[in-house]
Length: 158
Image (cartoon, rainbow, N blue to C red; front, top):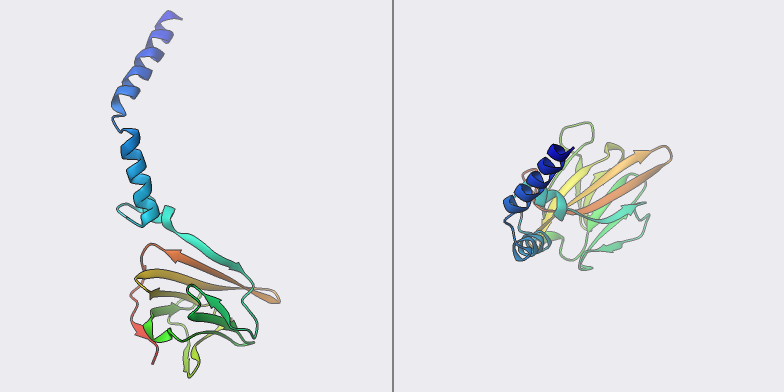
């Protein structure tokens, strides 16, 4: 019994001595995550932020981010537009794989809803993902800020 108690005391002492990180260092590391300093994969996961999850706006231009971009859902297309649409770079894929169908319109960019597109784009030096998921009788939209693009953002509004 005394041996077990001594081993527990020794292990506790060693673990406290091995933890040389001060409260200040821990605070600086946490501030780096909030500020977007993505030096490790755990920081990247921690800095991902859900902006919206729910029904895509139907036949209504829903402002996003700074209000100068918007999304809209018609029966067939997710429309992505706004006065600053020229400033984005994007890439889109189908849920089943391959490149998503992209239609350029005067009012913005259209993506076929049935393909359940996954879209990544950059805007004002930040990265975002927008995904459409299909469920029986309705769609769900998942919009997030992500730490970095996971695919090459090659296209812009034409």
